[in-house]
Length: 331
Image 1 (spheres, one colour):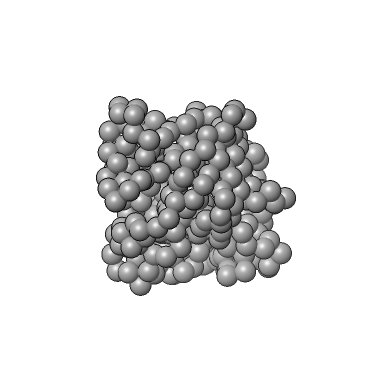
Image 2 (spheres, helix red, strand yellow; image 1 turned 90 degrees about the vertical axis):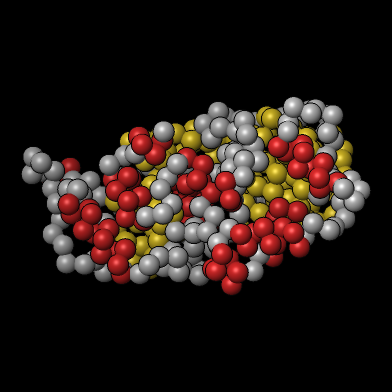
């Protein structure tokens, strides 16, 4: 997780006059903040379009905050929150979204999404437009609020918690995120993850102990354990078909392929869940989970590789985050 003490970078606003409400009362003018990853954006074209959109929709000049290598969104989101804006828009990839959500969770200030990454996992799960940043921005400014769950994760019994919105993973899935070729991702998008997944199919299982809601732990030799708050991952694959982002429940998935044909059993278990005898794939549900591994494994949050860990504890916070989006997107 990036450090929070780096100064944020606010860029000057284009020459636009602030808009007031229909009654002419400037004190009631709505204002948005944009926390944007400049490495993901299309540059000044989007910035100009967003300022024009705010003006045409009767919003004041936005607060424009660019992330940096030292501060990838936490400091900027705090600055936006302190400024008292009406909505904080996370414009970038899943890492930017996660940082903004971590600051806004529990505050009541809504977050908007303008997807600019490769995965855009949260946006895909809740139906936000991932093809057009300006259209996604318009959906935020014209939208209404929904409440979603967030999940707090703690690694290796550390003191700091990290938030995720879609899923966390230890093992095989995190190794894919850690070893995806960036140049290939730039060329073919999410298919780069498929290539990394094929490369990492061989591998040794690790002994794991998994406990859900404090119950008696199950012990398995696993290749991956995933904890989901939403159902879909990159490529539209639905890993957790029953997961809902506002139900206050976590879904836990254990992948334990055995033998040369073990991954075929995994595929059969994931896409044919009526077969409860398939021990290569197991699902559990609850509000908390604790995972202990015999050996360190790669770890990811919402598609971002974080490092390695042997222990993970997670807990869901029901409807802790407000998201502003259009009714069309919600449908």
